[in-house]
Amino acid sequence: MTAHRIGRRQFIAGFGAGAAGSAWPLAAHAQQGQRSRRIGIMMSTAEGDPEGQARVKALLQKLGDLGWNAESNLQVDVRWGATDAGRSGSYAEDLIKLSPDLLVANATSALAAVQGATKTIPIVFVQVTDPVRGGFVATLARPGGNITGFASFEDTMGAKWPELLKQIAPQTGRALIMHNPAADTGTVKLMPAIQTTAQSLGIELLYAAVRDGPEIEKAFQMVANAPGVGVIPVPDALFTLNRKRLITLAAEQRLPAVYYFRYFAADGGLMSYGPDTIEVYRQAAAYIDRILKGANPGELPVQNPTKYELVLNLKTAKTLGLTVPPQLQVLADEVIE
Image 1 (cartoon, rainbow, N blue to C red):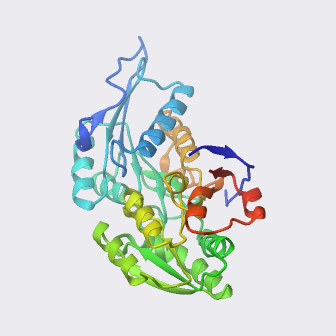
Image 2: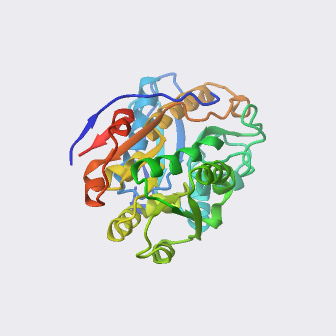
């Protein structure tokens, strides 16, 4: 498949050793008279996931632009696949034993683990759906404590998913909402907007609690061979890790689905609408820079995404027998053919 840019839109909102981990880049030595710093990163994606690699690369490149690099003053330790409480807890303890100056947590499970392990080491989180309801920060404006970072979604953003589903598949009368009850702050945050918009569009919502890969398949069995059904997974690391299974099941049952990150569409999903994840990691690097230079994380406001992107996969649409409206293609930030 090839991809080309159709247009750009910005939405301003409120503002290694396998899975066990590795040092990346390798240990660095400080330049004469300059103190070397160490940061630990916990990623929810597997080490071999290209998306996870791209995120960390963007973070390190931006840190390099800001003067932090392996050749002079920075050591970075990465732990991959921090997807559940047990693994995340082990990784958090492992990283803290290395005496980092700062920790980066990707996704809610990783943030919960490092929050439980330290109240003093500064923490910058990325891609956490609801840091306030999750109990990680007091407020977005003044987080307090040792934690700040970048939330994944605004409360109202969920409205876009049923709206887009109806645009690309007008026959949609029901939508399967898949959510992970083990980390349901995201569902609490996003569901009101999803429900309100679905009701206005005449879409009945069906709910499936999904805790692991096999339960994803059970959820699809709920709507097997049912006409007029679309799929909306509520953002969670579980669906990110199992995205190929999600995409395959949707294709097999010929169900239109709208996802929350670009790489779902890039991997063969029908469409996605959500924040530019790579940009978020660049923004996180700026916070890391400020904290390493003395800023108090509790005084740095949690940021909502500043850029959202709509991605359409025309090849998948054709396979599903859908005709993508020209106006939707014009609005898209990227069209994959």
